[in-house]
Structures are given as structure tokens and as C-alpha cells.
Image 1 (cartoon, rainbow, N blue to C red):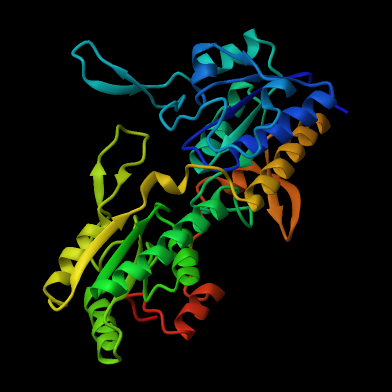
Image 2: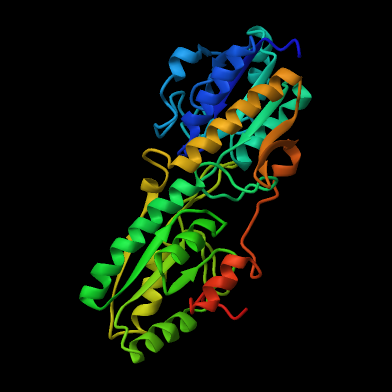
Length: 365
């Protein structure tokens, strides 16, 4: 076993169902291995400000079934692009990574366990030259992280989105409407693909393939001719039309991703002139996909990953991320997950299965 005796733990980026399950597995196992855990609350905020708090098995007992994170999340506490106001009150950013390194040294932190997505893993990797050792745990409902077969939080998001699609079927049929359900996922269409396929959507629109609105209209007309007077469309927030751009609700400061939103409304407006015989309604699921209790799969995966992270720390691993590969938890270089998003492809079996049962994707493959 290693000489690591004191670690800082953070949950970066947005929240995801299963974060507390990871914390439960990590802290409980670390404590059994003689490793003390401190929390950097609200992502890297605690390490930036030097305000770490105790995190022991008592604090995490019974939390695996809870949503959110008991130590808070933040997608703004980027040590390399930390928001601040200048003398004129204008929002700008600054590099405060040295503050993180100082806190690590000052608090005698041997290693940082960062639980997060691509952004968190990228930040953590960049801290290595400053002497910050790390182990990562992959988290995102988008399921777009490379180097792992699946991320915890994804299945919970898919299950909720599927339930929403199921419910919208009945109201769509009752009113002969075209119903568009916008789901999260940023630039990866995994939630839309799986929820759309599971929920029986007639059209699935993904970020990976620019859509032709006329193909979608033609699919709706074809259903009407077959006596199906309503249609269900599931669209990912990152989807865009041929030659178009992403729908953005707000630009963010440098170093932060823009806020996506409006993809469903944009598609609805484009369809209004093409399918005038139908009333079109849009439902944006938004943050309910990442809220609430995790499903059993994400609880189990979270605990497994938390335990594996604690054992990686005890072995003296550095610069690695725990990962689910072929049903087993392994470690991979953290760099394998940074800037290498995993996206849906035309040859994915789920895409092929959806096409085989008549789902339209708005694109000619």
C-alpha cells in the first residue's frame, strides 16, 4: 500500500444521479484503508479558496440513494478560467490554478479525487505540472466520455426521459399533435437515442447528424397516410439543421461552454409551414433529467467506481481514471478521456435497430 494518507474529494461540473453513491463507496473504503478524506465543496471552489471540510463515513452513510451531491457541484469553478469582476464591474476570468496547488501543499493533501466529466478531467490533468496528483471518476448524464463504456448518471437520465416520452404518447394521440421532446446531452445524442428508441419515438434528432427538416416532415406525412395522426419527435439539445448552428440561450465567459437550448422550438417553427395540418407542441425536459434519486444501475455503478477509486489511491496510482470496460472496473490514463468525446455513429447497433423499425433521423445515412 501507498503512503497516501490524506486526500481531497470534489464533484465537479453539473450534478448527476449517482454522485452520492460514488462518495459513499469512496469515503467508506478509503476510511477502511486508513485514508482521511476532505471535501472541496462546490467542485474546485474549496481548493481554490482553501476551505476544505471533513468528509467521513458518518457524513456519507445512507446517501447512495440520494440525488445531487452532499458536497455540492460547480461548473464555474475552473481554476484556469475562474470568473471575477474587473474594476469596471465587467465579468472576466483569471488563472487561479496556483491557489489550488497552494491549498494542496498547505493542507498536506497527497492526492485529489476528482469526480466529473470531460471538463473536470481536463482541469485535473492540467494541474499535474503544479504537483497535484489525482485520480478521476467519470461522471456525466451525457455519456460522452471516452475511455469508459458508460458513465453513472446516464441510465437515470434515460429512464426519466423514456417515462416522459411514454406519457406524451397519450396526449399526442388524443389531440392529433406532433409532440417534440427536447432532452439533454450537449453534443452527444445518447440520451435522445436510447430514450427515443425505448419510448417508441417516430423521429430521433441527434447532434451527430445535421437534420433535414423536409425529411422529418415527410415522415410525419407518411404516418398520417397510414392512419397515424400524431407523431413523437425526440431531439437532443445539441441538434442542428443542415448548414445551421447550435441553438444557444446564453454565451458564457471564455473557458466555459455555452448554454444550449431552443433546439426543439427551432424545429417546431421549421415544421409549422411543412405540416400545417398538425398542431405542434414542444416539451423541454431540462434539469429534471439530472435530478432525483438514481436508478439501481447508477447506484451500483457509482459505489463500484467509488470503491475502485479509493483502492487506486491506496495503490499509489496517479493521473488515472476509473472506468467501466466490458463489465469490469479498471483504471485508464486520465488523458484518454480528455478532449475525446464518445459520440453516436451511424453504425451503432442502436441506430441500426431504430432504423430497422422505421425511426426517421432526419438524415440520409
